[in-house]
Amino acid sequence: MISAFLDTAEVVSGLLHSPALTERWERPSALAEFRVSGLAGHLARAVFNVERWVAEPPQADGTPIDAVAYFLAGAGPAPDLGDTVPRRIREVGEQEAVGGPAVLAEEFDAARARLTALLPPLPLDRPVGVFAHVLPLDQCLLTRLVELVVHLDDLAVSMKVPTPPVSTEATDAVTACLTRIAVARHGFLPVIRTLSRRERATDPIAAF
Image (tube, rainbow, N blue to C red; front, side, top):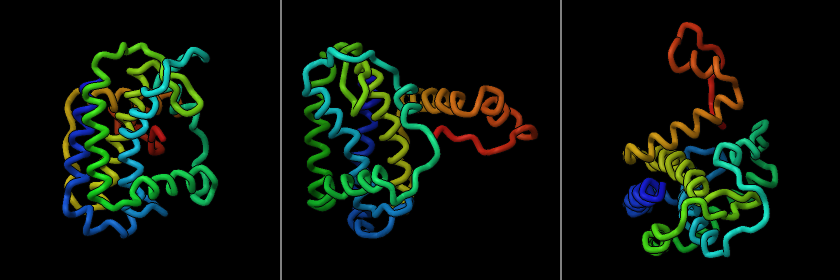
């Protein structure tokens, strides 16, 4: 999981250094109410937050959960974009991006370099505080890998450039995680039918 996370962060770095990001920095993104700048900042936080979280002592309190349980804990009806949480997510993304695209890319690369040295010696079962939850390190990294892969696509679409490919390890991990979330939310048969039998697929199936 560490290599998948770091390799995907390297792919994200390439997008953050793209001239297309500077060109579209202040334009609306592919996500409603998000500017490209805020979306780029939000994407970068997947790396910034890991560095912040692993800098804290291992969490001694709370029962660790896995990545699927973490995402399901926040599942529910789609909130109004004006609600507190979606608005705060956009605000924090813009705060991360306040220095402009070049500064964001530089800060992202610096954090990525530090994590490249910091993560490999850590045990994968090390408890990490992730917002209000505790996750083993490998599951913490999986949640951020999902964020990297999903928002890498969001940002590429917003920049009008092809979405860069990520490693097989990353695609397998993210696909498995999203599929498990979709099964938990919609049931096994609807997911299987959507994936294998288009004539019996009904409503769209999504993890989020």
